[in-house]
Image 1 (cartoon, rainbow, N blue to C red):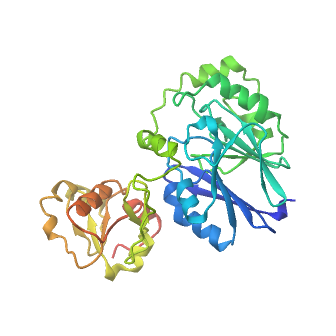
Image 2 (image 1 turned 120 degrees about the vertical axis):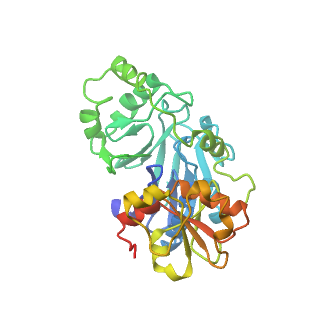
Length: 355
């Protein structure tokens, strides 16, 4: 009964993470799979606009590349937090095991234990076997890495070959990530065309491949895993406070970010601070008219040149050094300051004016 389900696939660009919202049309009962902390406002707005009753946030595993938004949604909606007890995640309202069902209206998700990427990995199968949410176990033409968090290539091989690949060929695969613009696959496609584990690949082929990938660890590993052990619960137990001077989004690291579209439409109400070097601005010949230019390495010495009577919007090429500028200004007492998300690269990409 696909028409009786509300289904949304949502994407966090910074971590290439997919989140999934499923709801029963009639009862409005819903589950959210693999939320992202920084997307809390987006996710909460969608829940409210669709008038859903969020039953629980489901975690496929303890993530290393982003922080979950489960704790935030629990404290704003009253939902539960559900995952495998093998994940190490604390504060769970329910520990899942193989075959456990999570019902929403006339539908249910069934837990499949698919360890390998991490020991506590779960996939969630819609009970009519039309969709499976595989987290970081099975990806589109790939799979999750197995070289940290007690991963095991051999276990992942058996999870995929013996469990996921036993599902109907037409079952749609919805992964936890994709880095190439793809959104979904099918069991049949992956059995045939997945270069790591499809076709005639055996366990030795797969383990040999996985054990020799030599990947760098995720950039957020050191703080994401400890944060996710607490289901994304902040150190101060406080929900992000929303200022009344701009529609900022507060990231898990405490940086307030603003969309470039909002800045462009409120150009006369804000002060833009560009912290690129002089050489960069000359070479790239891209400068927002009226922006104050202070290179990041000079900012502390020239901080008194920045006005305090208007909100300050920091920007650089990609939005990285401008985060440092945000922190410097906040430490110096500026309250109305935000980082322009995506920097000048996003500003250009979205066709916003420079003059």
